[in-house]
Length: 261
Image (tube, rainbow, N blue to C red; front, top):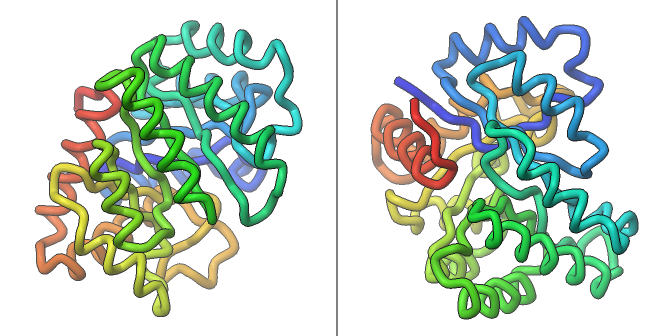
C-alpha cells in the first residue's frame, strides 16, 4: 500500500530535533511521497534543503493569505523566479483567501490573483487555502478558469466546507484534499463532503504539524505517518477499503503534481 501526504510543513521548529525518526515512521506507514507547502517565500531555503535531503519530498512556493501584509510590488517576481528555480517544485502554494482570521480582503485578493497568474504562466497547479471564503474563492477561480482554461488546476487543501461548496470546486475541475479534521466527531459537513467527492478527485493530507487526526488528536504535533488515519476514515465513510483509497488518492496526487512513484 502506498500513500501520498499532499500537504506538510516539515520545516517548522517542532520537527528540528527528530526529523529522521519522523521520516522513518512515515516510511513504515507506507507514505511514499509528500508535498511540502510554503507559507511565505522566506521559507524557501529551509524547504528546499529538506526536499533535497529526502528524495520523496516535492515542494511548492507561495504566499499564504494570512501573510499577505508582506505583499509588495516585488513579490510576484520573487515567487515566479523561485518557482522556476528547482525541478522539485510541483505547485504554487499555499495561496488563497482566509476571512476567518483576517479582514484585509483586498490585499488577499491582490496576492491571490497575482499568484494565480504565476501558476498559469508556469503551468503549475495551485494549492488553495480557503477558510470562510468559499464564495469569493469560487468567484475568483471561475474568472481565471474562463481566462486560462485547463492551465488553471489545483487542490482545495484541508477541506473544511460544505458538500455544496465542495461541488463548486469539483465543477471547476479541482481536487479536494481531506486532513485530520475528517476524523473529528462533529465534522459532519466535512465527512459528507468526503462521501461526495468522486474517486478521481480525492486526496489525503496531514497539514502537519497541525490537526492531528483521531486517535492521535490529543498529541501536540501531527506528522506524515498519521495520514494513514485520514485515509482509513475516508475509506470507512465511503464504504471502501484502505487499499482502494490509498490507490486512488495516490494516483490523483501523481496526476495533479506530475509525480512518478
